[in-house]
Length: 408
Ligand SMILES: *Cc1c(COP(=O)(O)O)cnc(C)c1O
Image (tube, rainbow, N blue to C red):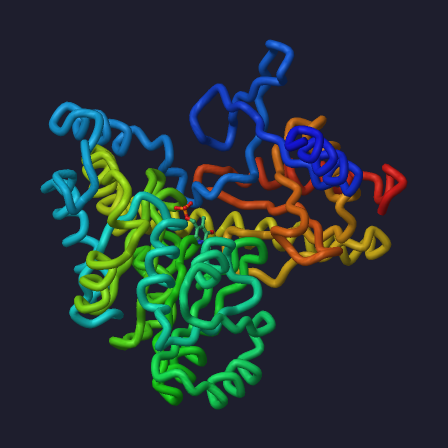
């Protein structure tokens, strides 16, 4: 019964061009990556799909710090943070993260999580109790949606960026505790949330602002401190969540917030309490990554990323202007996430597979990850790319026949 049911569901997905597949990489995360083709052969692709924005995932200094951390701390933490798994390596990293964010989150304390997904679940279920109401942008990441659904608080979602509607919702709210929650950089669109206006709303309506900076931490701000530094916004009402597996190149996440909020997460965040602490060796490697991010090397990698982003936008907008008949749209994004919106699911898949045949790995993103009829190629750039890489992607896209698969 179950297996027949699952087969039927899978066939439906397939018919809607929504089947998801994994691909096996046979080399470290880098612009040039070897993948297995499933028939025992491998080939090299130019990767435009990772979130390794600074090219740190296989940086030798961080890999060496990971090895050194393993020499010093072994492989595993052995238990959750509240039992016996909390180490000096974790505590030191939390101190570094708290100091890094403290200009924008005054007196911040920081708390490490194994992943951003778990950090968001803990935040929304802990703060979003029966006294609270949650207000969420409709394009927020799945982990924020799920956190809001698990929370006792009522969650209301406002259309992407519609602060006028959010304002009205807040005005109507009778709950004493109000939480506004938003991606800082929207993960499938690349646009940056209007955080100053959101904070102003939070202040006016006595609300708190939870910011998920998965794609901004390391990338935005003068020293990679993220979206708050980018806008130079400071307030105790800010609750910051940054992830450590994207630009930081390792794994994990952290919350930086008022110490009472961090303490509440330790007391009752179930996805904090009931899980094994990340290996201390990872925390050790992350301290090395933070040093790179905030130092001269991080700054030069962010400059390279900005150069590549401008070059790609220039090439793609030229291409779209010359041939509007393709129906492609370049999202309005100033970040290394540069989605090319195609619309139809099958057309997006066909375009991704044409690129694949040319040796380019660009993921097609389809509903429900993005709204219906906005299937897209989610092009992401890394500081490890070169201008030649960007050139190769643009030239290959220019040669793709619009509607060549009969679906567009
Ligand atoms: C990736 C991502 C997460 C989840 O972080 P992980 O550490 O990968 O679990 C949360 N929010 C946003 C916006 C993300 O893009």
